[in-house]
Image (cartoon, rainbow, N blue to C red; front, side, top):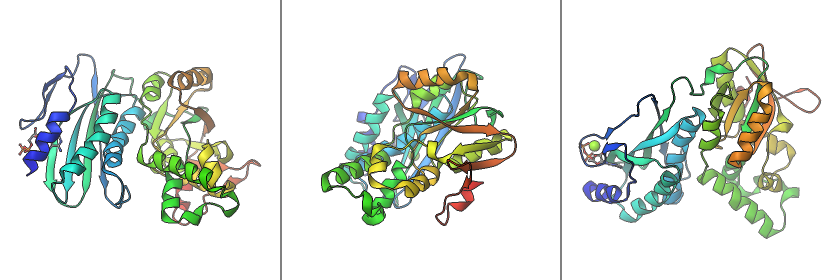
Length: 329
Ligand code: ADP
Ligand code: MG
């Protein structure tokens, strides 16, 4: 039965000239161009842990690839090929077709070919490996931040965590923020889209090579992920919590303090957090304009270690919710 599924996948997988041998043999053969380094990332998604069990197959397919492309984006790599390991409770043709709708739509947007994988029976789990290319020495790493750098973030923060909070308890939005039914429902639907269909910031990541010093994608929450950059770079960071970019939908559904928590500590946004020297401010703004992605300056790299978030009066601000406290560094 797995063979039927593999045949369905094979019939729809995209093509690239540099795929010497794709799905169908024991392994794929890929032509890595002269003068490029291969950049490889892998991430698994498990039902109930990384996505709500009731998530539509197409959304799972999209997200499974998106989180891997986000890793390539944060390295400034150009995506090329991917592998897909599926563990499925049963050979469900409709589910596979839906999954491929989401997965291959995103793959086509970024010209990435599906070149192999594995299909087994078991609890629903999806593991993708993405391969990208970068010029030697141009990759953006976590360890390049320097004291005096600005800290920037793309897009908006906290939307995915807000969607999860609304799924867990629709009343979690502040009472006084609950607007007339339609507007609230529209904002919630938009937040859900941010959770289910993250947009990997590949164009921004690629353009930041040679401009940014360090970069990471925000998967665990801004303070946690910026903390990884600080630890790898041997420096600290100061972030203005009220400078964190918020979407209109987040503002429509959550009040000030709840919003700060979601933005600073909520995961799953897949935005890029990067550091760049101050003389690159115009260059960074130009990259955002070119890619039509908001870029916001949220703080700076300082001597020391850990991430300090501060409020408008310069007082240290910490996420209050239990379990997030350790992210404050
Ligand atoms: P093997 O036993 O040699 O691992 P498989 O039957 O697992 O062979 O896979 C046959 C071919 O189908 C291989 O090229 C493999 O990469 C590909 N394949 C299997 N599952 C998937 C999948 N979920 N997505 C893409 N390719 C797959
Ligand atoms: Mg196999």
